[in-house]
Amino acid sequence: MKSLQAFLILALLSLSGCYSGMRSAEQATNESAARSSTASSVPDQQESVLKVSLKQADQSQSMAEAMNRKILRNADFQLEVPDPVVAQRQITSIAESLGGFVVTSESKQRDVGDRAKQELDVSLVLRVPALQFNSALEQIRGTATRVIQEKTTGQDVTEEFIDLEARSKTQKALELQFLEIMKQAHKVADALEVQRQIAEVRTEIEKLEGRRRFLENRASLSTITIGLQTPAAIAVNTSGFGRNIKEAVADSLGVAREIVLFLIRFVIVMVPILILVILPGWLLARYVFRRARRWHPARELESTSESD
Image (cartoon, rainbow, N blue to C red; front, side):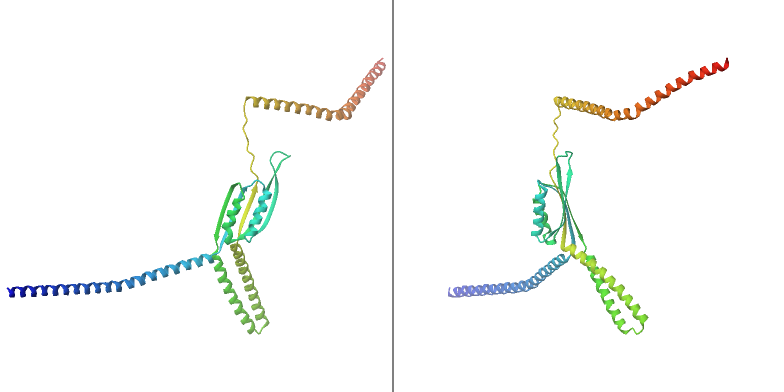
């Protein structure tokens, strides 16, 4: 019996030792797996951080390129406003508040069929900073009761601008070389030839610089052309039988009035003609006719006496 108890105790102790060994082995395995996973996650994290950094660098570079691009922005508006003069003042204030200015302002009276009533058309050309272009468009739209026409255009001239800068630098370097050659020229003919070459290079530089300044100015200041006009009159159709009768009577009275005026004009014109032309002609013709009748009987009597 004691031997059996001792055997059971030894068996329990051996099983507990094996279990503890298995737990320690499992913990060691888990720790090594954690270390390996941590070690493998470090390069992944580094790679992700590198990708984010490269993406941010590309975004910043693209933003810098967008800021440096030279774009010519233009807008053309045809607006309907209650009072063109008031709208003209408002738009001028908008341009000046945004750092721009009015290039041209023109007002013109327009006939609408009624001589007693004329409408005013106003044309404006504004220049505003390119950064304030969209803000200016929004504020200008707010002054109108209706936008009749709107056209916005943009032209990217960055490539041309860069090409002009490169050509200008090349011409300037060529000018410096000609100046060095000029210093070494000992003959008058050589000096004059080099001077001619320098003048041609300087002319080309001025042309390139002028074009570059023009593009830079147009890109920094956008152009907005605006036409202001009052609302068009709405024609109301009031056709009907009674309306048609009234119009027919009015037309008849108009025709009768025109006929009377024609007769009056005819009489006024014909009276001087009758007195100055027709009446003297008729009197002259009557006098000639009477002389002719007197002359013919006298000739007949003479011819009769001669025959006897």
